[in-house]
Length: 444
Image (cartoon, rainbow, N blue to C red; front, side):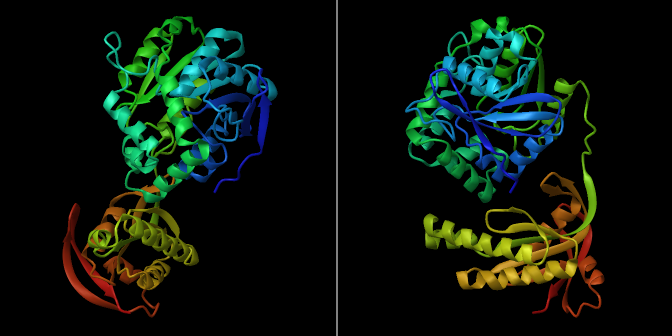
C-alpha cells in the first residue's frame, strides 16, 4: 500500500472543514476534484489509483480533496450544491497556497471545475476534464445524456447496498477481479452512507450547465473513453465543442473510472497538456519470468452447494492463503481471478514450491487446487502482465488435474539439479498457442 499523505483541512465560507491531501513535488499545481463520493485515505490502497497519483506527482504538486458531506470532510447532513462546491474549491486553493493551479475534474467534479473556471478565470491555469457532462439525464433537447435504465440500476444497487454489482458498469475491466471489487465496496462505504450517496447522485443529475460552457475561457482538455457505459463519448465531446478552444481526446476502453487497467495514455495526455511536453512512456517492459496460474477445481459446483455468502468467505480465506504463500516464496501476486490467482516469480523452483504450498493451505478449506506454470518472456504494464507466456501458463493450468501442479518443458530444464521430480504427461496442443508442448506433472 502506498504511504498515505497527511490529511489537512481548509475551512469554507460557512465554516465547513474540507479535507485535502498534497502529494508529489512538481513545479505546477494540479487540483484533483474526484467523481462522486470519495475517501482520501482509501484511494492509496488501490494500486492503479496510487500509481496514477504518483505519476501525476512526478510533474506536479497534486492536491486532492474530499467534497463536503463525504470522506474525511465534514459530514454536513447533505451533499453539496454546485455553489458550495465552488466555494470549497476556493477554500482549498487558498489554504494549500495554490494561487493558479490546473483543475482536474472527473464527472461531477468536472462540472464544479468548469463552474469555478467560469467564475474565476484569473485563478485557473487550465482545465482537465474527464467524462465531463453538461447535463445529467437524457431529454428531448439533449439525447446524449445518461441512460435512465443504466443509471437506475446503479441507484438501486446503492439503495440496497449491493455496491459490488456496480463494478460491471463502472469498471467492466475489473468485474472479474474480486479483490478490486472488495476495495471498491469498502471505499464507497467509507466515503458516504447509502442515503447520502443517493442524494448526491440525484442533486448532480438535476444540474444543467450548458449555458455556462461558452463562459469557460481557460485552456481546456476534455478526455473520455470510447466505451464508457455511463457517460457517453458524445456527451464529453459536446462539452469540448461548446467551450471555446477546448480540445477533445477519446481514449480506448470502457471504464467509467480513470484509474483502472491501462491509463498510461490518459496520464500522458494530461502531462502534455499541463507541461507542454509529451512524456516518454515505455509501452511494455519485457522480462523473463515464471508465471503461475492456480484454479479451484469444481468452483461452480461448490458455489451452488455452499451458497454465495459462505462461498465468499471461503474464497477470501483462499485468497489470504495464496497471498501469504506468494510472499513467502518471494513472488509477486499480480491478481486474483475469481477462483484462482496469477503470480510471477524470478525463480521457477520457488514458483513450484509456492504452487504446492497453496494447494496444501487450501485443503483444510475443502478446496482442491490445480496449478500451471511456464517460464517465458512477459510484458509488464504497470501492475498487470501480458504476453504469450501468460496465456501459455493459463492453458497449462486448464489441463492440470485436481491437486496437480503441471509445468512446461521449459520449467523442467531450468530446475535441473533442484531435486524436484517430474512425470512426463506427453505433448499437447494449447488453445491460442502455436505448436505442440510437452508437459510434466510435479511429483509430490
